[in-house]
Length: 255
View: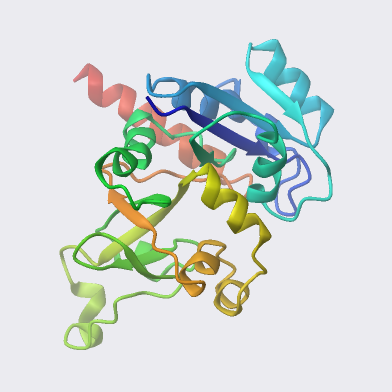
């Protein structure tokens, strides 16, 4: 039985939204929403919240989470995760962003599933269909194209694939535009340690997408499809979007 640990990096000093892990969503800190969504999966051995800020640490400890303090100097969430799991016995590590309050068990299990089906899997992620032109062209939504076995070919903030036939009238197209990449990851412990030692790559720096470091270094990322499209909180205005989604989901269940 593989030991699977999920780590939630939660940084206070966000440039666009300082203190966002503690921002209230429906009266509850965002980091609590993330934690509650992750622990709904029964496949995890442990869930760790990794932060550089004592205020986040204290809130997480108060609601019973396993929180750890990490250095302020980390440039990426992956670096923070590597410090948090130092000395921990785990086979698989999940990276669950602390600004994803709509994460659920479907996403967690999709990250884990490939490790039990294929021997050569070292890195996993998830995607969902894009049905909206606005979402397809939005650079804040990362797009991914995959091969026939669902291994990532490329990740980009640009609309990919480019549909030459439909391009002149793409605004009027009805259907699936492509795949949106959701920022959740699974790694074998061995690969994560290698990944942390790799230098930032050319494409990674161009697109500002860390997963391209693995692609450029010849590693494959298995990208499973999920039905949910999450709403990451990047700026204060995203809080209302998340609350509206939660309210709509609740009302739909009542109907």
